[in-house]
Length: 210
Image 1 (cartoon, one colour):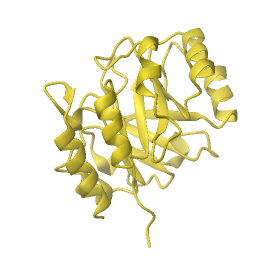
Image 2 (cartoon, rainbow, N blue to C red):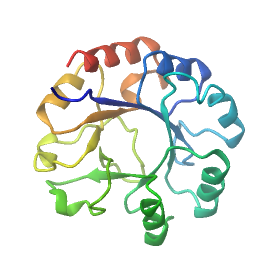
Image 3 (cartoon, rainbow, N blue to C red):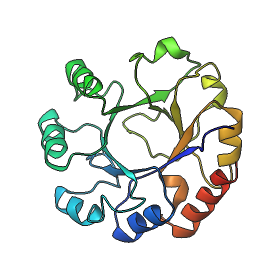
Image 4 (cartoon, rainbow, N blue to C red):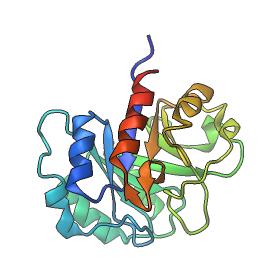
């Protein structure tokens, strides 16, 4: 029997949505600190959003960065100890040594933006247990709501979360047509730019039925 698919809800900005993710036993929640994102939160919001961390069913916490300075990433990581650090491959603000250090610490969750067919060899970090494969949009670190051709990743059989244009309507197709072990969703569970509880619940229900 296939293990249960993983669900990551990214770009959370309110306690209401964080509580819902905990209630639904979502696997990962993403807090976005990128200055390029409309979902950016400040350091002052972290403690409030994570106030129930450690309680039953609280999701693993992912801090997402894109075009953030390394010193800011280090500060937030050391201060709040997220379970994973999501960095965008080829982010010019982050050095290879910085990537490699997080990889060695087993907290790196790299996001690769897919523009063409790829194989395992294109992804690097051979011992990494999880990564994100997302759509590419110039100047964006993800969360664009745009889908890439899923056949581009048909030859990837490493553990990855599929991202990019996934919503409650196509999530079953996304998971059955790829080898993804789960999905990463931001705009796909939003209405007018805000997280929509109904869409989150429906997406989770559809995934859990698989």
